Image (cartoon, rainbow over all chains, first blue to last red; front, side, top):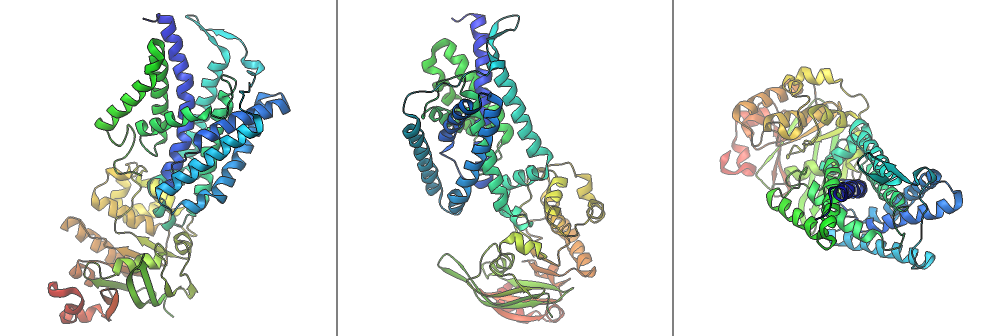
Length: 291
Length: 234
């Protein structure tokens, strides 16, 4: 039985992991909800984000500049992916969309491996995040605390965009019925482009912020992608609040179970998903019949 | 000149030919009803006009401008507005948010107060989410969402379907008021008695063809011509 201190520490780890999962899943869920595309390249884009942070840190020696430059790069990647590939698959069957995004994911991961090699890279913790912070009842790595705060601020920003702006209003309407948004005179293609790019920047930012905590490898996004799929099923397909709450629940379940036996952490996650699907098939915040 | 001119449009669902050389015209301030049995091609006609379905051939002009082949968003900005059969209210958005989405790209949108005057019930429910509204309220919201854009032509697809008789009565009165205000409307409806009470002209559809064109007043006086496209019910 782990000590209380170990459990509290794991709960904080769960918060850090959960907030990142929330950010990744938010991008995934608004893309799925609005565009109807399940983006299987999301995990690869998480890794691309982490490598972007690695390259930009080497070039600028500033984590903040690396984040800003990384966002610009992810934005360009998002625009290019939507314009050049995804747009041509909106009207195609689901399996075509899955195959093409899965294919893009493989190309991106292998491109990272070809350029950077298979060995892991390290992104240093930013100078303002080095060391540990005393919380009274325990000592916790400073950067991880900052990570939770930064992701919370990003999610709050995304919330404000979605719920307090006209663009967000269109996106939320589009998640429900993109065809009707078009009938009401709004160019849904432009909205789709915006949503896709925001989703890609969100997952890229998650990768950048996670990079100082782990070894950066081309395959680092694989488990995040699978977990974020579970998160959007838990939270409800297309639901932003669902992605946030689902991400936090998933992060805590994985981390707290790891305190007892890490082999069971994913088992517990899938067990919970199964329970939610039985009790509430549309997910915690989903609407029946959606997507 | 007609506000809407449709010349010999043909629409297909995949390989299935649904509309055959459909032609019709609608003058300004006119209310035109499309009548016919289920599957006759009425809804397909409205969806073809709005650009939701692309006719394979033929021409559609709104205010003299060709609109066939354009995306629904561009057709909406040209002044046409479809109120779809399924209402398509955004369930997660409030009544007011539904209306705000609709007015975003309108050239001269109605102020919300004008909508509340026409639909006091919606004003009471302005902060309620679309999915919590009754069927009648959803239909009002769907019509209000079209009106707030101040379109030159409104397409109403089965506006009274599945609603309680009292609600239908209210909506018929509303449609009559809109017609009296000079709104140009094309309406598809199975409730023939209701629709004939406010329509000016009628097109009868059968198996994707226009088989009848005439004045609603003539059909009110003598329903016999309707047997050809409405079956025994007429």
